[in-house]
Amino acid sequence: MYDTDSSTQPVSAYRSASSRQTGWWKRSVVYQIYPRSFQDSDGDGIGDLKGIRARLDYLHDLGADVIWLCPVYQSPNDDGGYDISDYQAILPEFGTLEDFSDLLDGLHARGMKLIMDLVVNHTSDEHPWFLESRKGRTLPDGTLNPYRDYYIWRPASEDGQEPNNWGSHFGGSAWKLDPERGEYFLHLFSPRQPDLNWEHPEVRQEIYRMMRWWLDQGVDGFRMDTINMLSKVPDFPDAPQKQDERYPLAELHFLNGPRLLEYLREMRREVLDHYDVLTVGEAPGVSPELGAQYTHETEGVLSMIFQFEQMALDKDLAHPTPRWTQVPWSLAALKEVTGRWQHVLHGQGWNSVYLSNHDVPRMVSRFGDDGEYRVQSAKLLATFLHTLQGTPYIYQGDEIGTTNVQFRSISEYRDVDTLNLWREEVTEGGGDPQATLERIWAQGRDNARTPMQWDATPGAGFTTGTPWIGVNPNHTTVNVQAALADPDSVYWYTRELIRLRQDLPVIVDGRYDLLLPDHPQLYAYTRTTDTEQLLVLLNFSREPVTLDWPAASPPACYRLLLSNLAATQRPELHLTLAPFEARVYHALSSQEVPQA
Image (cartoon, rainbow, N blue to C red; front, side, top):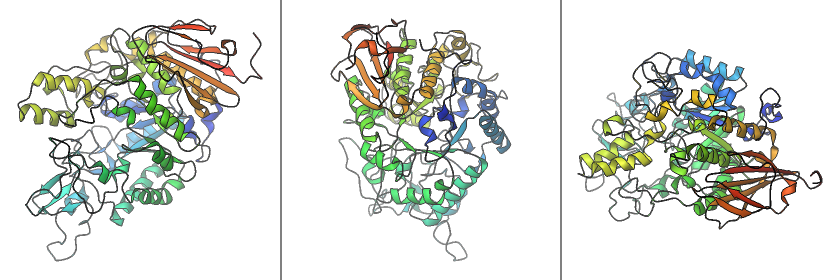
């Protein structure tokens, strides 16, 4: 095993990089926090800023460089805080602006950074802008309403229906009739999340003022929610429909729209270029080529993006109804998707590397084995993420191998998308409750939102009160306290991976090359620079794999850096990998390899 004794390992020089030109975010590891579920400090069952502040030493000891904080803004909380009613206020149940400042100071004192969610495709329907906009184009005194065009309003169609057939991501129509204004407004998500009108210059200036305000507080950047949905095709045409689709997602009309790059270049020019920040754009429907354009080192508009191709590997895209239809994912497809992004972005742009977040199921339940091989497969997936080119993201709990939850009643679920699905299929549609519940177990967003499992107590160490959503019953065995006490846990293995990244430039800069592309169980690849090479072997199966040494250079050139099982220390011509075994080998350039 790689020696990571904290008393002897040097701190990587990469950590001191702090300018846009050096791209400090390329050398970073980001840890995502869903504040409502991370740590409750006052016993009300809701995580808060003081709770996060109390856990900073844990995050620092793990090795995280950057914390991504999901929304803590003022919000009616229809969609987990992604429906913001005041961009410059903290939701009281999370704390105060003073608590936020204390948290930021605590992070910076530890050499860590903070990025916040920037949610500017839409607001809450309780935002003052929307409350004013719905009053109509003119005010009672006959003057023009200055907020009239802050949102996307359209009259009914000629037959008195919605302006077009666009569907919401959360089901149903993407249009809602507002009785006060007498027009429909667009909401690509919940009806309580009206889309902002980015065509209106004053909307953009309002957003830029808000961004500068947060950056002046000391925030180190933004994760930009649904950032490539800002620009819609201006004439709002109908979307093509598949069979049985009443309201199709009109992604070709609002993803990567005609003015998106114009808006993002303006944002960079007016805001981002004046600060040393990390920007990661959530960008579904982006190709590697477009991703390279968005994130180009000098000409791009973002530091990196979240692309969604690997998140669609188990979705039945050919049959969008019923929603959440799942198909088995394949290792061949994962290799293909990963390879395209690794090759196209190398030397051109930058990617985030992730398999989980607050919107998707737990990665060990989705891409690994959350039963017999939970620990091994959680370590294998972490190895995969931390040895690819791109900035790795850890979602809270992944570092201990947290799994999906299976609540037995819909009453235990909180996510608006989950509750909409149940209403559509069971309450109104008369469907099979058990079949729908099983789809929720596999794909529901609340899988990622159960409280952080700190210990085996009834509240999992998250709260002394009643948690806002139930704790995963397996917290009695899967928890931080147990992981810290076990030197063979997922936690310590993840910590080793992070330290490897700090010490080996090849993990950041190396070229990715796939080996054994047709192997049905094994994912093998190299990362190569002029001076060193990394060889990664991952058995993505429940069966042993036997193979010949796959690299071009002989085994004697390599040393074993890391394995999630007790592997032999000397590379051999013939290898056998156990189920879900991961190995990482390292070789210097041929001039520096010691003779056997």
